[in-house]
Amino acid sequence: MPGDMKACWEEKRTLVNEYLDKWIPSEETPPSQLHKAMRYRLFAGGKRIRSILALVAAEVVGGRELQALPVACGMEMIHTYSLIHDDLPAMDNDDFRRGKPTCHRVFGEALAILAGDALLTMAFQIMGDLALYPPDVEPNRVLEAVKEVAVAAGSLGMVGGQVMDLEMEGRDQQEGAEEALEWIHVHKTARLIEVSLEAGGIVAGGEKGDLALLKGYGRRVGLAFQIVDDILGSQGDRERMGKPVGRDMERGKLTYPAVYGVEASLARAKELVEEALDILRSFGEQAWFLRGLAQYVVERDR
Image 1 (cartoon, one colour):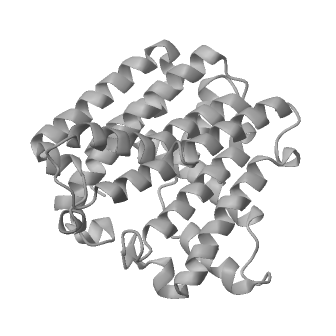
Image 2 (spheres, helix red, strand yellow):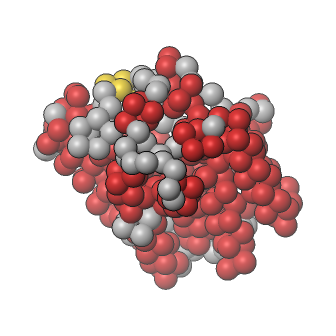
């Protein structure tokens, strides 16, 4: 990752962490165990890709990152809730994430479920609280952004993708595999990345044409991100990944390497990144960070 981009990433990541810490109840706030579980996973050292994308999108459409902070924090909370639930024995049954024991291994299954529930509902509380936005953010734009996030996170988006992922587990991966694979990854992963950009752009006053471009970029980068994630999950370095590799193959999950092979999967990820870069042309230099992020997606090793 280039130095300028790394510095910008860390600056925005620090800002998001600062406001998450400010807005999430402390560990001492009753019920303390619940808030400990929420904070344990939320501050476990994630990249903050979705929240950073919301902040960057606000700037790309001519606004300011502070206009998108509640949306950015909300997206991170939704993403974290999804990870907590994905790790549960009833889902992926993972013991480690980002090098640390998963939430249910530390706090038990019941509290992990409730911590995920609390993060999801609090995300909408924060995103919908007009008092947290600068005065120049229009309330109707906040409402529109919250609605788009809800659709992307629900049965027509991320949750629907997770359901299809579970339904396809262990099935014959030949018949209809390509169509099912694309559907799962678009909904389970790409939709949240896409809507992070869209929502950040909406609250910052973005025009419809610019929002459509950001969504198109987000869809392609989101798919490329998941393809690389599938590749790393099959042959990545356990220490750098912070979790075991090869689990998807053991469970018979539908992944790009399983359907297309590693080489073809990586080629598809690179193709998607090129398409994403092409979409950004009309933004000019404003989109320098998004260009760097697209390149990072296919070059990352964790």
